[in-house]
Length: 351
Image (cartoon, rainbow, N blue to C red; front, side, top):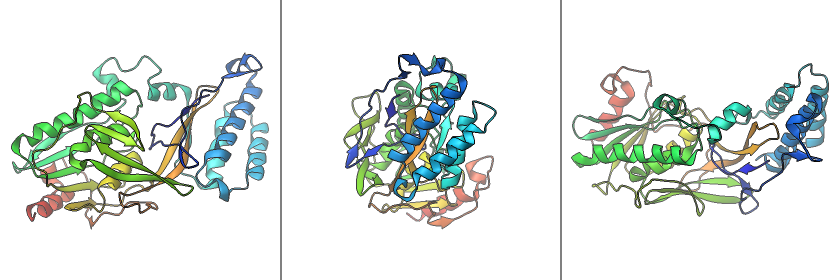
């Protein structure tokens, strides 16, 4: 079993005072692949794996009495009629903990997410891994950009996403844009790193947030085309250097709503409180915690909440990110018909 330190809704692994490196594990028990074990034994093994990861890494682990939770989960599995109920037992654990952000990803989806299957071979395949990237000029002098959800950690696909975002920014910036609208209202999360690497020209170089757990703060930052977790590059554009906007000083509105989730919330938090920046719309979904992924013996993936998130000042976010200005996010056919977008334009016109 291998532990990933990539971001999913988003993904970060904290161990003590730093990040733990991927550590190869073995998918064999007594020389036998666990996929070949009898159904009941395989299910029990899977549950034990998950309980072990939870007790060691869950961000509220010190508030849980693990012997009771584990005993109840094992009893539930023993009473189950279906070997797949190991998944149901894990979901039951998260429900008991009041944990909304952790879950198990089935083997087929896990392979798709990590790129271990055949990978995207056509635009239609890619559309299953990333949302729409859209850029346009509003009123000829304001750049409008959507940041998509990203459902993959495949490094090549992530690089393409970051490249695409920076390419759109560069195209819009041909008009020497200094006022921008970043729309996160349909960003349902996934892998935040290509989002941050792609939006970097508008973020600017430097720290834009932190992962917080057990007294440690691991910085999230952008520099010259690369998104960093601590000192580690998690995504970068294909060029040697990232794009830099023509205007050094920019006014930015970030549009948020209740469909701004997890990794999308990380991007919103990266802009929250910055000079010449305003969040407009509605409160985000409230999944402002960080998840780590753990590969399990049946090739499924445990997605486990391991830390909290903080803005660039180090202030920890608890729950939803509140906008600076509340406006209805009711969908419209075009930005011109959108109340939140209209409020953004009005704010920017005063800058």
